[in-house]
Image 1 (cartoon, rainbow, N blue to C red):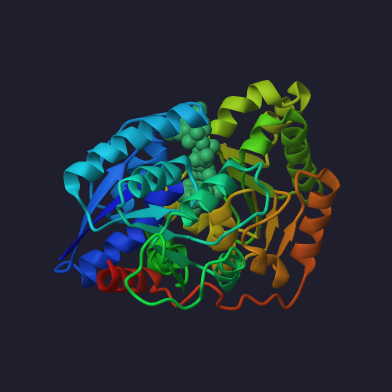
Image 2: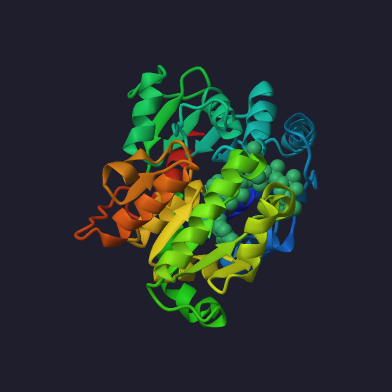
Length: 381
Ligand code: UD1
Ligand code: UDP
């Protein structure tokens, strides 16, 4: 029996962790024991608890309740809390997801006291160190023992940074093992796809026409905090909705909700608020999100996870960022990077909604990435 400590904190990590917890419960209950630590980075009911209720994730054994704060204060509080738990629990390894401050805190706390780090979503790079996430993921990868990359691109990025494709056991932070494992988010999308539509009423609640609405999300700090960018994004969405007479469903991250009044031009804000096309809602549950992704015409987002889910459900995607870690989406021709450029966004919408013969190859594994990760942890920790 091995014991792992799993760190979650931000919304996408809670969702990703569901895939591993499910694999442990169904196939590894006798061999892997999981201690879940919630850092409390996300804490609103609709940013955290809803996912435990809906996705069957076991309740966290610990909650550090760190809440919001500057990067330094938030990360430091998490490091201190995680260190205490690691010393008490003495696990065989710590499982970290993605690239948030909770990921970085886990990586620092564990590596300093020689607890092996397992990084899920290793190797992803935007090559833009102005992004807090890029700093977090690079630092986490370089103290990890087992690195699971969801894509071939991520695996190649690790090779480019000096990781070796083939190493002999025992693995350690000094002799790390890298894998191309597939994506645990794809596991989840497959698993929850059919129940998402039967167990939610989000489409009828908002009187949406199937395959005829835009699903948009915006939360990336450079988009929300820079008024010029936020105005360009909302201007583009407003113009598209008016020109094409199409609804825009926008489940708003709390970061964005808090900044709309201060950072959006008052006349644009007024137009958006009185538009019959805009359906601005609080964050939705994961099943509701899947139902929206499956039934929309197109996704427009700056989210990493939502870009990929659009692809899983064979929808085109406008990427509202200057770059993406999921470059294969762009290479397939199903996604276009527009940054926060109003004209590029409008033109990408037209290109993608008139394109025929889009292909969505299976790039993210076989839906069993979590099982693969569990069996490798079991053999190698
Ligand atoms: C974080 C991650 C980002 C990820 C995103 C997922 C970092 C550096 N960033 O960004 O990579 O894409 O989560 O959603 O870790 N807030 C609330 N309630 C909550 C949570 C946040 O009101 O439950 C508000 C607070 O005002 C907070 C702000 O949102 O200051 C930002 O939250 P934070 O966790 O710092 O970063 P995110 O933008 O959510
Ligand atoms: N998501 C959700 N409700 C929402 C918005 C997003 O359940 O209102 C899910 C989405 O389906 C995906 C994950 O949250 O699985 C993506 O998280 P987010 O966009 O916050 O972060 P990122 O992926 O950019 O780090």
